[in-house]
Length: 158
Ligand code: 5GP
Ligand code: MG
Image (cartoon, rainbow, N blue to C red; front, top):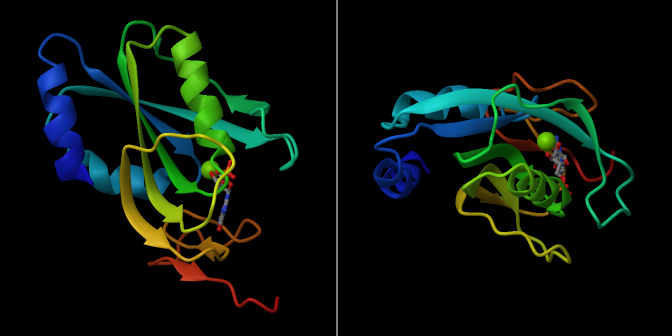
C-alpha cells in the first residue's frame, strides 16, 4: 500500500505537505506501520468518529475528535482501519471536501468482500477479507483485541 501511495502522492507534494488523517482508534497500528514507508513530506493528524446508527446511509457522524490541522487547500490522505458498509469513509471524505481540501485520497487496511449500497471510492487497500467480524492489528472486538498481532475473525456462532 505504501508503494502505491508513494507513487501517487510524492509527485503532488513539491510545495505543500500531504495531510495524513488517521481515523482513530482502529487505524493506529496501520498508521504506525506505514508512516516510515511514506517518502514525501506529510503532516500527521487524527480524527475520531462513530456512526449514529448503522441504518443511516447519509453519513451522520458523531465526532469525538476533529482534525487540528486545517484541511483547506491540502491534499488529504484518509487512513482508516476497515471498509465495511463505507458510510464512515464516505462521510469523512465529504467532510474534507466541504472544508476545502484540494484532493482526498482514501486508504484502508482491510476491505470486507461484500456488496455496498454506499458509493465510496477507496484508492488503496492493504488486505481484502471475507465478510466476517474481524479484530486485531488495531481493530477491536468489544474494546479488546486491538493488540492482537494479526487480523482474526470472531467465531461465527458467538
Ligand atoms: P462502515 O461505515 O464502513 O460500515 O464501518 C466502518 C467502521 O465500522 C470501521 O471504521 C470500524 O470502526 C467498524 N467496523 C466495521 N466492521 C468491523 C469489523 O469487522 N471489525 C471491527 N473491529 N470493526 C468494524
Ligand atoms: Mg473505524
